[in-house]
Image 1 (cartoon, rainbow, N blue to C red):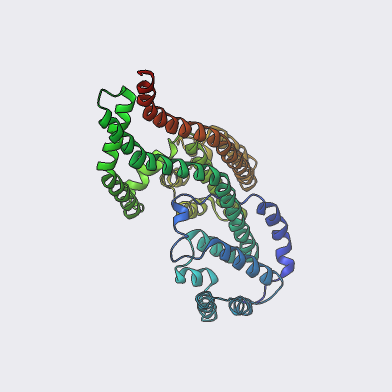
Image 2: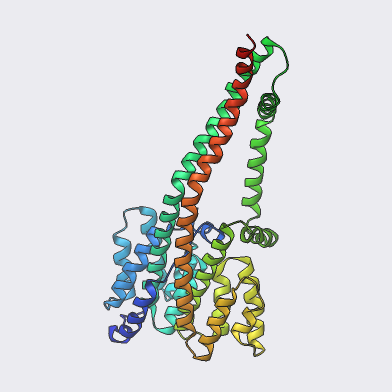
Amino acid sequence: MNGIDINKVKKAQSKADEKNALQNVVDFLNKDFTLFGSKMNDKKKEAFYHELGILLSAGVDIKTTLELISAEQTKEKDKLLFEKISNSVISGSTLSDAIKATDMFSAYEYFSLQIGEESGKLPVVLKELGTYYNKKIKQRRQIVGALTYPSIVLFTSLAAVFFMMNFIVPMFGDVFKRFGGELPAITQMIVDASAFFRNYFYVFILSILSVVLLVYSQRKELWFRKYGSIIALRLPFAGEIIRKVYLARFCNSMTLLIGAKIPILRAINLVKQMIGFYPLEESLTQIEKDILHGMALNKSMSAFTIYPRRMTSLIKVGEEVNQLDNFFEKIAHQYNEEVEHQTSMISSMIEPFMIIFLGLIVGFILIAMYLPLFQLSTSF
C-alpha cells in the first residue's frame, strides 16, 4: 500500500471529526472480556490507531508507518507484534488481514479496517477506532471512579460483619452460656446464625468459586449467552443501562458502515459479528432475512423488544430521507449521554443506601449481643 492522497481524504476527515465525539462503549460485558488475557489493552490500541491514522493522513506509506511504530515500542513483546504486522503487509497482506492473523485484535477492529480499506477511507477509520478506544477508556475510568467508594464501604462492612460473626458473637455466646437462662429471640437468632456461618463458611466459599468457574467456562456457550443476557436485561436499574450500552454500540457501528457506503445487508451482517450480545445478534439474523425479502429496516426492528419504539421511529424517518447514518449517529450520541447520566445517578444513590443498610446490619448484631447484658443489669 502506498501513501494516501490527503486531498481525497479531507472531506471524509471533516465528517469523521463530527463522528469522533459520538463513539462510546462500556466494556463490562462479554465484549470487553475479549480484550483481557492475550489481547492488547485498550490504551495501547488507542495509541496505535491514532498514530497510524496521523501518519497515513500525512502521506507516509504503510510500510514506513508500521516500522516507525514498531521502533518506538519499549516492550519486546509489543515490538515483535508490530514487526509481525509490518512483515505481513510487506508480504502482500492487507492491514486488516495482518492484524487478524495476530489474534490480538477484536472482530470489530478487523471488520472496521477492512471497510476502511475497501472504501478508501482507512485514515478516517483509524481515527475513529482511536476515538472509540479513547471513549471506552474514559467511560471505564468514570465507572471505576463512581463505584470505588461504594465498593470500599461494602467490603469494609462485610469484613466487619465477618469478624463479628466469627469472633465477637461466639465470645458473647460463651459468656451467655455461663450465665444460663433463656436468651432474647434476636440474640438467639444471631448466635445460631454465627454457628451456621462458621460451620458452613467453606461450603459457601466453594459454592461461590464453583459458580465463578461455571460462568467462566460456559460464557461463550449459546445457552449461557442467551439466558445470561435475559437475566442481565432484567436487572433493576442496571438492565436498562446494559441495553443502552449495546444499542449505542450498534448505532456507532451502523454509522461507520453506512457512512462508508456499505450496503445495508452487508452492514447488518458485519455488525452482527461485532456486537457480541445475544439478543442483538438474534434479532439482526432475522432482520437480515426480512430486508432480503423487501421489508423496511425500521419495520423489521419494531418486532423485537430490544429496540425501543423511539429508536425505530427515528430510523423510519432516516430511511425516508435517506440519511440513516446521521440518524444512527444521533441515536448513539443520545444513548451515550443517557448511560453517562444514569451511571453517575445510580452511583450517587447507591452510596447512602449502602451505608444505611450495612449500618443497620451491624447495629442489629450489636443490639442483639448487648440486649442480654442490659436485661441482666436491670435484674439486680
